[in-house]
Length: 162
Image (cartoon, rainbow, N blue to C red):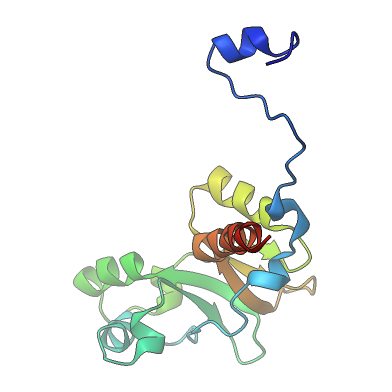
């Protein structure tokens, strides 16, 4: 410890000796996002989506949220598996747009993964639809905690090789 950090170290505060760049500040959302998430149309009913989720098709039963997009890929909302389960019990004939979130928290492809992580924490969500700057916004992909952790894993793997 140095004279400058000794008091902090005694209090249990870690002071890094070297500069450690944060990989999340250096990677764009576009580099890690899922570019073709499973989407649903605004007219689909929650009961139809529930049947697809419980099917053996991995593209449906692996997804945790489903962006709701129109024919032009404009993001209309999102619906989570939890939203589907809640709605199928109370209103199985309602649309996914009625049961989902109509104005979701989003992020842009050129934002950093650090921005995405911060936004997820601030809004208590685990996944963000990635949209372009058009008005209304078009869906480009989706980014979640898994993609952010993959970025960290790449850094750890690179350190092992070096």
